[in-house]
Structure formats: structure tokens, C-alpha cells
Length: 169
Image (cartoon, rainbow, N blue to C red):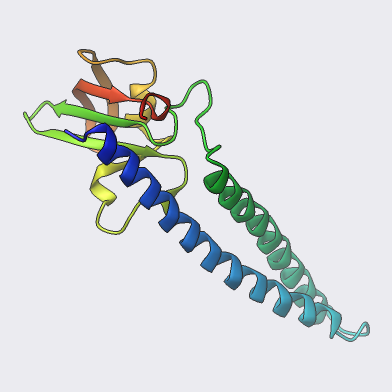
């Protein structure tokens, strides 16, 4: 089982790694945005339908890049401020849960709001807040049995421990 100190340390390491990954993505996105914007401004206004289709496609790409820049910027801010939280129908970001599965195995997992928080090599011990397993854990406590859908069908697991980030100090 993960201790409170270990969970807090893991969460802060994961957050720092996520910020680093997101900052790298932001640099790449800003570079791509400049390329697309320059490409649009360099276009000759007189052109054929193929030119118009190219402009439309480039405009759509620029729009997607702008949206992703806004998302990444917001995620970086949330990670730095510690304001990444789940909604009322989600686990809180950073919740650590220990489960015993139907096959008898026990696993400690951490809920993440932002997939970039999942550290390399920790993919099997992380779950996103929107996953069926994480959604099944909402409102549960130690001793409860949860039921969720996996790719192989309906699964059952017993909650051994569940620790929301606010309770970790």
C-alpha cells in the first residue's frame, strides 16, 4: 500500500513531469502556429479552387492548434496552482486507491485528470478520471465492492483503501 508521504511525493513528481511535458508540447504548438499563420499571410489572394481548399485546410489546422494551445496553457496553470480537480461525478485528481480484483490481485492506483501526469513506466498504475474504473469509484469507501465495464466485460473489485488528495498531508 502507498503511504501518505509516498502518495504526496509521487503526486508532486508526476505533476512536475506533466508540466515539463506540457511545456514541451506548448513550444511545439507555438512553432506550428507561427508556420501556419505565416503560410496564410503569404498566400496570394488570387487563386483557384485548389488554393482555396488549401487555405481552408490551413485555417482549420490553425484553429485546432489555437484550441490545443489554450487547453495546454490551462492544464499547466492548473498543475502549477494545484487546482486540477474532478467534478462532482468524478474522483479528485490525485486520489490514490488500493483495489483487490476478482482474481485476488491487489493494486494501488492513482487517478489523474491530465494524461501527461502519468509518469513513464507507471501506465498500469494510473487511471484517468473519465475511465469506467474511476467513475465506478466515485462515492465509494474502503470495504465497498465496485462494478465497472472493461474491454473484457463486467468486472468487480473490492476497495481496500481510498485516499483523496485533500486528506493527504
